[in-house]
Image (cartoon, rainbow, N blue to C red; front, top):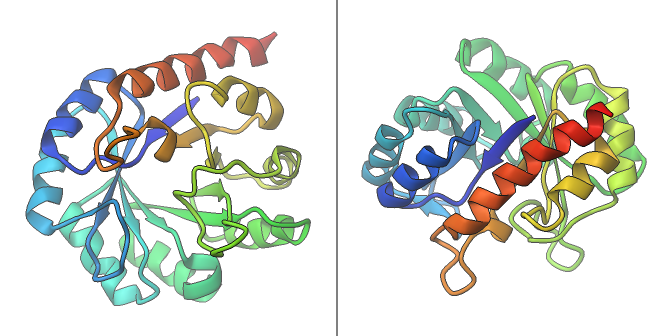
Length: 225
């Protein structure tokens, strides 16, 4: 089970999360796009320097392939996470990025909205190494970091319809991750909002991160039975 944690914005939190040994840690570089969890280049490099025992994931909100490539050059991640591929970059641009960025892997966000999401996921699975299933906020239309779950039965159908690893996101935290895994059977799970501090979401709640990781890995045994 791949356990992925986002929302790391300081090198102190990076060191503490690294010690908890998730599989992936996400970093959001400032690309001049308004988002609450981004960091500047110097901070990104300081964070990555602390992530010695995990795979670094660079999230890009950009719909400009050149900007995506600059983000990868700065962060030097194992994976680049294209959050706006479906409604911004398009499948041809993702395919080109996948080719040009190798050996960096490509993860694509699939907004889980309706049964049409299954076909969309199948198309992007052909040009990505991972898919990440996330929630679209019902009022703002924003995808990701909403703190809201979506229809897990639809996510389970997507998992069954594609051949690449699928990471489930959207409102996951220590209290519901085991139920989510048992409902969807993903290759991995992701948390940002629900493992961040309530009083300051730019800092991680390390107890929640610890329990999220432990509960996700415990759920593997439940699925094996």
